[in-house]
Length: 395
Ligand SMILES: [Zn+2]
Ligand SMILES: [Zn+2]
Image (cartoon, rainbow, N blue to C red; front, side, top):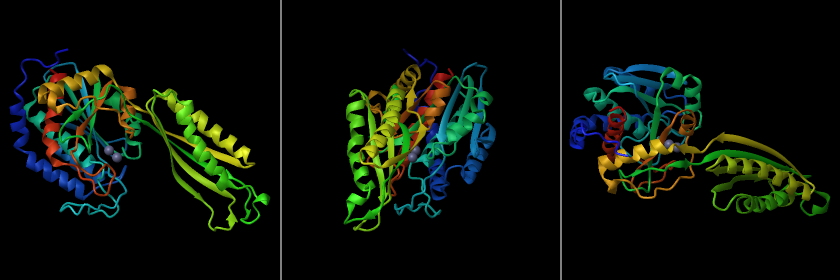
C-alpha cells in the first residue's frame, strides 16, 4: 500500500519548520520536568498545554476525564478525522539525576518521559497549526493518569470519542535501549495486560519449637511460590506469553514464632485474554489447593487491572509505512518485539482502531528508574513523525 501521496512537502521543510521553534519546546520540556505532577493532579501541566494550544488556534476543551485536555483543529473540508494521544502524568519517585532541571517537587518525578511525549505532541501541534496542510479534523488528546491505569478509561467514560469523534487514534512511548530516534511497530499485541493478586495464607500461629501444634503459613506460602510457576509452564500454551511474579511476601516477626498468616502480592502479565483468563482461574485454585494440603486457608483477592494493548493491523501498517517513507528503512527497527510492560492506551484501542508505537530513547536508564531521563534529541524527529502521520492520514 502506497500511503504517501505526491503533494507532500519534502521532509526537510517539516524539519526546518520544527527546528525554528525546537529550542522553545525543549525549554518547555525542562519546565514540565521540573514541575512534575502525579495522576489526576496535572493541573499546572494541563493549564500550560491548554493555553499553548489555544494560542495556536486550536479549539480547546479542558476537564475531560479530570485533568485531561482535548484540542481540535480543522484543515480544509475533508471528512476524515485522526486522534493523537500523549500522556502527562509523573511518578511517585524521588529523582536522582542531578539534572539542572531536576524535579522541584519532592518525591515526584517524570521517570517515564511523559513530559517528553507531551512536548513532542505540542511541537507537532504548533507546526500543524502554522501550516495546516491537511484536510479533515485533527484531535489532540492530552491524557492524565496513565501511570495508575485510570486516565484513558476516565476520558472515555467522559465521552471522549462521542464528543471528539476520530476514525483512528495513535500514541507513542519512548523506549530506553532502542537506538535514539528509531521507530518500533508491533501489529496485534504490543504490550501486556496487567492484573494483581493479594493472597493471604492463614494458618495457626504457635511456638517455633512445636510446629506440630501449629499450621505453618510460611511453609504453605513457600510451597505455593514454587508451585505457581507451574501455571506458566504447564497451564499456558508454550507458544503464548505469561508472566507470574511474586513481588512481595510478608509474614512473621521472630525466628521462634510461627505466624498466624503470610501475605503475598503477585503481578500477572499476558498478551491475550485467553491466557489472562487461564491465569485468573488457575492461580486462585492453586492457592486454595496448596493451602488445603497443609491444613491452612487461602484468601485470594484477584484484581483485574487492564487488558493487553492490541494494535490494529491496518493502522499499524499505515503508521509503519509513514515512518519508512519519512525516515528511511534504517530508522525503523526490524522485528520490534512486544513489551511485557503495560499501557492504558489499550482502552482507547478497544474503542477505536489505531496503533501505539515506540521511539528509541537510546542508551538511557530504564523507565521508572530514579536515574532515567527523556532524551530531548527525539522531540524533533518524533514531532516530525506525527506531522507526517497527520498530513498523510488527512491528505
Ligand atoms: Zn510509566
Ligand atoms: Zn509511560
